[in-house]
Figure 1 (tube, helix red, strand yellow):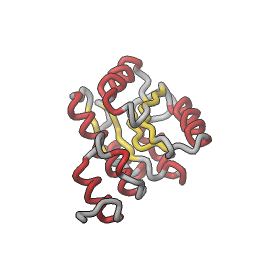
Figure 2: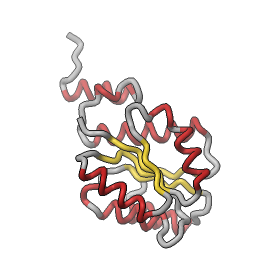
Figure 3: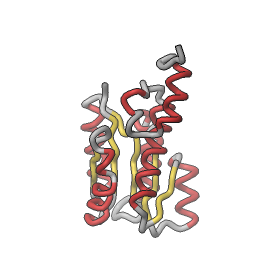
Length: 165
């Protein structure tokens, strides 16, 4: 079974540390990788791809040097291997125009406003990862204890992996 990673990109180290702390409960199943720039994230994505693994969610800050989060997420959306990755802006500074552009061009799935709550970030991650497992038509059984078990059970029944008999 391939690993499904969570990727977080932000140029502020304290934000990356907070995301790592808040999503630690998911790391046993979904390893978390962090990058401080879009260039560093591309290097991580190349390594993950070479391993045959996937990224289920990319949380990305919008305001970063050289390249905005919206531009980076648009690149992911336009790259076939990463198109199905759930994409979320994690920012407090994206204006309406940048947010609309990210929705329209990056296939944005979620917007997390800074500051976030731990519960809100975990719920967003679980929802997006559940969507990812279902859309990729992956065997949901290994993820039932960590993600939305009700939605994954419905998917497992539909696939014939679970039955009432």
